Length: 77
Image 1 (tube, rainbow, N blue to C red):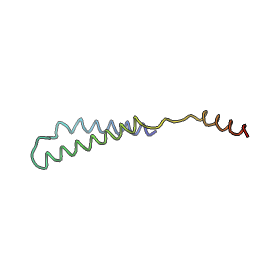
Image 2 (image 1 turned 90 degrees about the vertical axis):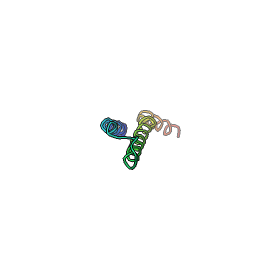
Image 3 (image 1 turned 135 degrees about the vertical axis):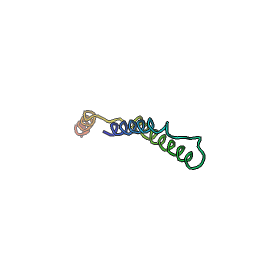
């Protein structure tokens, strides 16, 4: 379920970057340039965080493995 959320956030961030990058002027002087650089930096942090969550999520264990372990423990007593 969390993987779907990470993927949705990545797609939304990519969509926003698709529209924003042509309008942002990184080479502009003053607040406009600072805003563009800060906005792009935050967008890259969002992408990095969601990719990290998507790629390094712990694997789920199936219920079969857990039930077999419980059966073995109860029979050994």
